[in-house]
Amino acid sequence: MNSKDPHDYAALAQNIKQWAKELGFQATGITHTHLGSAEQQLTAWLDQGYNGTMEYMAEHGTMRSRPQALIPGTQRIISVRMDYLADIDDDPLKTLKSPNSAYVSRYALGRDYHKLIRSRLVKLANKIRDEIGVFDSRAFVDTAPVMEKPIASQAGHGWIGKHCIVVNREAGSFFFFGELFTNLPLPIDNATDDHCGSCRRCIDVCPTQAIIAPYRLDARRCISYLTNTLQESIPIELRPLIGNRIFGCDDCQLVCPWNQYATKSGEPDFMPRQGLNDAQLIDLFAWTEQEFLDRMAGSAIRRIGHNCWLRNIAIALGNAPTSNEIITALKSRVDHKSELVREHVTWALTRHLI
Image (cartoon, rainbow, N blue to C red):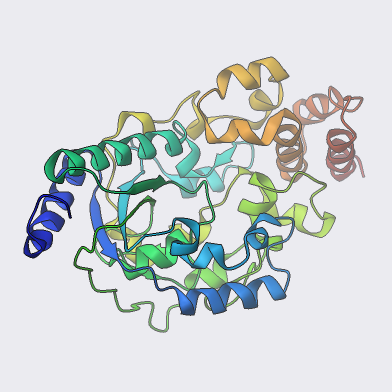
């Protein structure tokens, strides 16, 4: 530290947490850069091919698990948490049980969180700079080879549950993380013990059995990966299991007992947009590409593109109860310019016209 006594790092850490709270983060933790255990787990996971088409998970080698290799000079990582459940009267399970409705993962109902959290991390860094002078920092929000979940766990935000998502005893698991890498030797927070116990609700409820063992996820079977990341044809055997989930899946979180303590967010940007919390499949399927781009501007959904949007909804329509309206909607896309869309529309029609 340039202008403060080194013995003031503890006070600075407390100030950082207070500033982060004022910026809209629900919790802040500080950890070191040692991720050896997480590196071993990542290597084993990649060796099994569980990353599917996410080649980027392996492209950076050990840089992902060695923060000092990514940003030389990094001594500490400030990890922040932001809750995202919109403060509305929402019943996700009811939507999942309504086959003509579209289910969108609750994190994607509002505005994309990346820019929001990163901009506030930059403001946090500026507050620190105003207090102590020049120091090195770099903000990350799920946009670089950073192991945010192990970092968050080490920083005391919670433990990584059997579904491979961070869980907090007081706040559940519906939250985002962001990181500020820094060269400040701040005092670190203690990690949290695992409190999953013998519970296996997340494993049992997974529609595609993607949680192949406690703490082990095969992304190739995960509905979030299939609908959000995969740009190719979705395996036929998994399509009936997707149900009406057109972007992401929350099942493992919805059944987690700790989410009875999940808190609602007052962040306006996380409020549902375009009525996505209560939309009908047929209505969304009718969007033209330009409508999709316009309506999804600023949304995490926009990045999958219109073709994958139609692909996902076609599967959901194929899983819905047969009706003349659904058949008519599917037929309207049977000659779509995209082979990907045509394939999934044809599959869906076959489900209804057998």
